[in-house]
Image 1 (tube, rainbow, N blue to C red):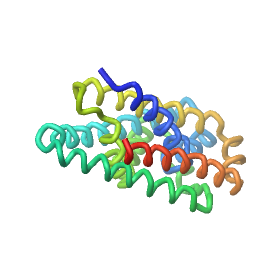
Image 2 (cartoon, rainbow, N blue to C red):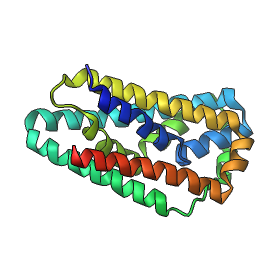
Image 3 (cartoon, rainbow, N blue to C red):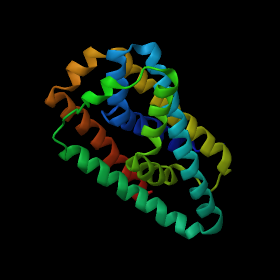
Length: 206
């Protein structure tokens, strides 16, 4: 069903991407502090639906390329490795600042509003689209059926996002205090960046 070597690389790679402070994780932390974890789950459900939509849309494009232009897929795989290298280098160079938007604290606490906020945050993030399109192809084996591989990768993405958002929302103030210390964000960025660079090198040379 799937290449377990690729899967064993994909799981820690995407988990480190998810756990690194970003738009959705900061939102989960902010809401966890202000309205509590239980209500924050509604934002998380919306975010997961948005991430799934982005992932599936990216996957459909990848599937078309794989079946119609196999050689182009190989080029996409190299571009994916280069993008991971680019992300890794930028993480290493990042100054390490966790930004929070005070306006987030004023968002409606209605379940529907929270769900919509999470959904639109996920699908309106251009970096999320770029990363999905670049990240998925390198972890797909052309010698195995496509549908099972993509289903498993999308499931890993959603599980990773849910676990990380739950950690941020539950940790709340404690995580906020730890991550707002510049050195801690820099260390996390360097660890994530190193993983991105290693995976990029492996993909480019495999």
